[in-house]
Amino acid sequence: MKISRARLKQIIKEELEEAYTSPGPVMGKDHNLIYLIKQHRKTWLNREWNDEVIEEDPAAAYSELMYSVGNFWNSRPVKQIYTGQESELNAALSVIKKVVDRAERGKLRTAYKDIDLVTPTKKSPSALAGTPLGKRVGLIGAGIEVNPFPDEDDDL
Image (cartoon, rainbow, N blue to C red; front, side, top):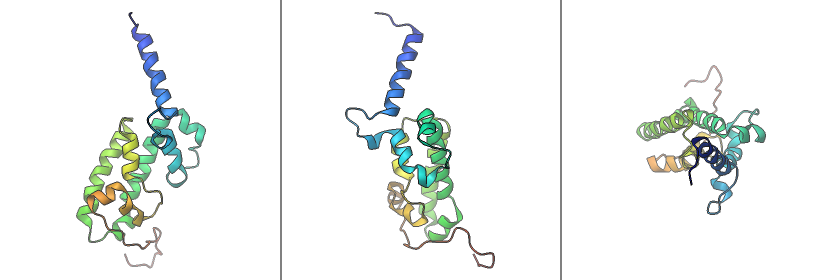
């Protein structure tokens, strides 16, 4: 039985759409890309990313999610809270850069793993130490919050 190139592309497209929108027989819904993005939407994405928009373009939503998380990992409050752990933070930032680059190029093969690896459930600098990446590089959370918008007269 021969399959035309156009039919093969259509089959692949249908299979990818199915993989994005429904959990497979082996994987639970927490391994579904759209589900994971929706799980982190309120914390990490702008309001424009509603369910419909995420479902229409999961690759763009994934890219935006990783961009937002990457910027947070590289922010001043994070650098302040991990003072003295610069080598650990730099190791994490090098991994984050690779994750963000993959997301921006639309590489979805490792999307589930990347989201789990780098995305904390809370948007706080100390929460980064609790991510698998934070644990892997040896970040130790200080358990304090740093104001990301310090007063102008604060010494930094």
